[in-house]
Image (cartoon, rainbow, N blue to C red):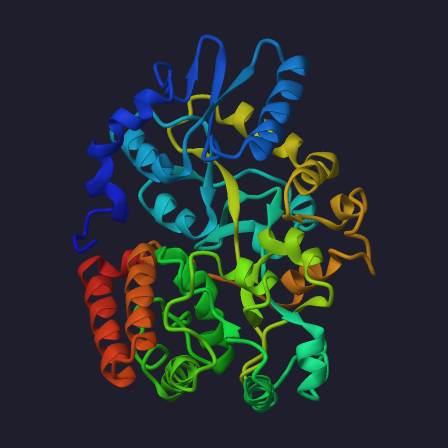
Length: 427
């Protein structure tokens, strides 16, 4: 995105997805019709999550027969483009879900309206499940996701390593010792699998920018949101890049992982793997599998925050009903239903209390506590689409063996040029 017009990066792809939107039955794709409001969701390919979304709508419709909500589900791969296409045609649904880092871009583009949800209700949510931009709340989620360092306890014990905790994660020096000793043991072809076989842009940012932030760098200077200079190419960012590249150079991590790094971990090919809660259901296949927090590289251990959340379109002709729908749907029961159907973190303590394993001391509790204590949302700026593609490309080049300083300087120049050409996206 290099123009000063307020529109998201995927704008140029909008025409290509008109057909996709039509294929999903969007003949009444506007915000409302005589029958009520329309709700769009990305999870046509996720029947478990879609079933909960539909149940929430069904419950609403039973109580409000004169203000029904109609659910329309899209494949995730086509969803963002479908939303942009609908915005172009002024046919956005009233209620829609959105990936958290996209929220500021869509708010800036005028797609979304600030939510009217009481503060005491939002206060119950995990902070990273509430999407904010310029001090206003634009989205809220029923659940959260998080990453973890999955490991074989026997490999760590053999290396003489202590088991890190959220209160005391490994330091950079400790983690380096663990890597050295596990590799020297010679039992595992891969010491620490980063999961680089996933070529998706967002994985590279969601997965690896928390390491950068733990070193003390970032994708953009969050004090102004007007430059990446110094935070993405300063000494701390260079230390992160050197460390990332060193994992490959020292033989701890493959430059490109297999298509399923977690399966390799389960099958004994790797001692440790960087992965997400979505794989936690398979951890029981490893006799001595444990999930650990990431190391603290000097600025605190970090994981990415912000998953799919819900918003109201600015063009919705009945915002009051849309707001009421979202507000009344934020119940512990509904949040618990998502956590029961999938490997996701319930968005509130009240919801966690309803789902086995999520209570304090429960087998799943680690991810909720980790999200509370370590989650850092991706930069809430409308320029995020350009930030993430630029950061992901830079990280791929670094892992591939390129010169870290040159790569980071080029990334900063590109990001700063985009920010300037877009009038700093309103900052």
